Length: 286
Image (tube, rainbow, N blue to C red; front, side, top):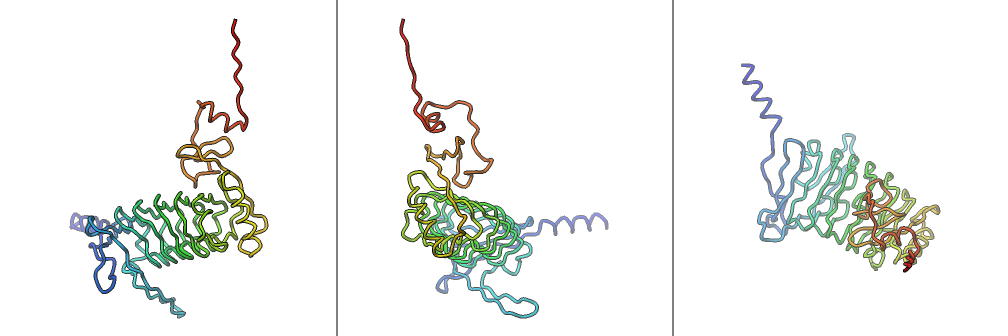
């Protein structure tokens, strides 16, 4: 009898939900399916890996009743208390609007590099979300995508992103610094209100775009979307990485953090950048 009870408990601890479709697009099932594993990971993947996989747009409404009833078309919402991690697999092209809204127990979200867009309110009110890995090929983030993500302390915006809509970090009060890719600061779609910089005190901008960065901050301050104390600091691009205050970084989001690359051997070119002056080498002949 004890053995049977142990087996039953073991099976329950590894319970998974069967793969289900992510929802319909124009009354047709999407090329997208999801599963929730026993360890609380919501996995989203293509059904047919030879075709584009697009997530449907989800609707979300809030009924102001005493027990806070929510209505959403996101099919995993009923299991929201079981979801601790989100994993978007290779082949998925987008994270749709309101996909993970109010998933308050989610701690981490990772997306494959096939994702090119994140819809509006995608992660709004994911209060526990503290670790996000964005696609390296991400181009667009919709409005309020990370609003009310109180536990998020940093995020790495990839080079190539060129479209960010209103207030994506509104009330993300623990993001205090942010590195801006050149592709974004050059974009006509980079709105003054885009970042909602109320909690951010430092922007990191490339040396090549210093004037554009300064102009952006001035306009954001004048429009009331940034605190008057907001300032910027400059990094330099170096190969596929970045140089900031004599330290090398792999990712934009690492700038200013302890995640720098420790190097003991410098080339002359690297040493020149660190020192800020040209080294002069004198050779004497006898």
